[in-house]
Length: 319
Image (cartoon, rainbow, N blue to C red; front, side):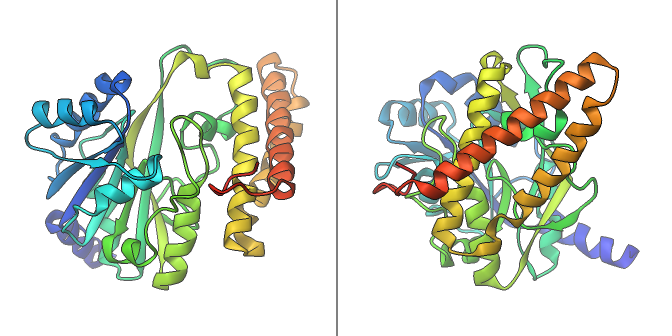
């Protein structure tokens, strides 16, 4: 075991990796600056930091002038996070590529820990933990099992490095060659602005199939994800759950694999039982969380049904 860890540490200390950060609006300049500054504090320095800007020449100019040490590229094609990340990867010259989002900051050991599992040639990608940074107090009714609603790692994920089906694109590293082999993120399916779709899950499934490998979740590799105050509402919670259900349905239709959403079905069963257990408790906050968990499951289920039934539009979403 010590020999294995020694090999992994040696690999991580010398790994050649680039970081791609996708962004699209000047409104996020403060968080973009914070994200880029956190990359300069990494214990493993990236070979190159590539800032991919989505159809915004003004923002690209600002960032090129302010961050001369970064490589700024402009996505002038299809809009959206998927196409913009893909544009960033065209500038990568290293075997590994990591992704960070424009509303996140990385822990100093984030990159080194994220690439450590690549010492195993069977690993096609890795992902780390999301710590929500709430701008407003976290609501008492908010259940940790639904932390994914606000871009956090939810209760029930592994607490040690383990093999998983998928990770999330804002805290992800990939083998560049395998990423390119599957043509990267789908450009007809993915996040546009603040409207989410599970393009990361789709990518993970396709990369694992193409590379004959697997993904590893590395909870010690941490990023801090901004949660704006307007997301601390039940309205946002319900809408986000519905969107997730609809997105997973569309993903399953794209992949045409019956088992594509097995993990989601298992998660739903676990959360349903946890919600019932919480409802039986006399503590008022626990009861409210249990009720919200059932609302979240119902919303996601309704979205899934709609996503499976609705015709797909030209851009690959449920019409």
